[in-house]
Image (cartoon, rainbow, N blue to C red; front, top):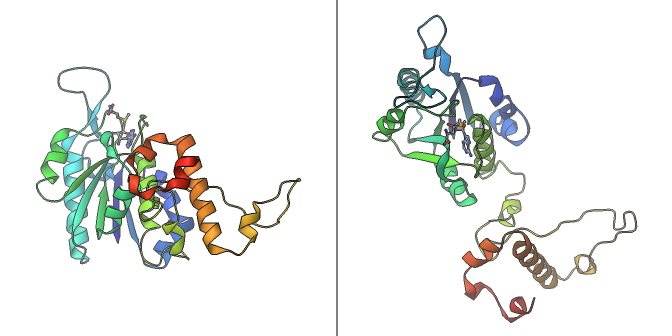
Length: 250
Ligand code: SAM
C-alpha cells in the first residue's frame, strides 16, 4: 500500500517511523511519502491561507497550493506504478471513522491524506478531486482538533495493522473490539497475563481451566457486560439473533 500525506507540518508525521507502522515501512509493506504543502507556494511568505468569503473568523486554506501539491503527488505516484488512489480528507464534518471503514481503506492500494489547519480547505479542492477518485471525508470523533495530522496518524495506524503480514499474529485483530464475526459490535473484555497473582489479585479460574468452550463463553459474557456498561448504543446495533437465553439473563 502507498500512503501520501500533504501537510504544513511534515514533522508531525514523524511517529510514522516507529512501532508497527515504522516496521511495516521498513519491511516494504507500506510506502509512506510525506510532503510539505508550502513547497507549492510561490510568494515570499509561503502563504497557504486567506480570509473566508462571506466573512467570519479564521482563515481558509487556498486552492492553488493544494491543487498543485495533489497534481504532483498523483503524477509522482503514477510514475512509480501506483494505482487506484483515494483521497482521505480529515474533517470533523466527515463520516465517523470506524473499524468497518478501516477495513475498507485497508483494501485500497493508495491513500492520499489532506490534513488541514485553520478552518479547513477551500471546498473546491475536494469537489475537483472527487471527479477523479473516491473521496472519503473522515472524522475521528465528535470534537475539533487544531489540525488533521493527528487524524492521519489514527487512520494510518488502524489501517496498517490490517494489512496482510503486518501484525505478528493475524488472529489478534479477529478478537478485537468491533471485529466482524461472532463478537461483532461487542467490545473486547478484560485480558490477563502472568503472574497468576499480583498484589492479592488473582485471575478468573476459567482462564486456567484449559476448557476452550468455557473460555470462549466467558470472553463473550465479559464482552457483553463491558459493552452494556460502556457502549449501550452498540448493543442496540447487534443482531438480536446473536444473543441466547443466557445473554438475556445477564
Ligand atoms: N471549522 C472546522 C469545523 O468546524 O468543521 C474545523 C477546522 S479544524 C480547526 C482544522 C482541521 O483539523 C480540519 O480541517 C481537519 O483537517 C482537522 N480536524 C479537526 N477535528 C477533526 C476531527 N474530529 N476528525 C478529523 N479531522 C479533524
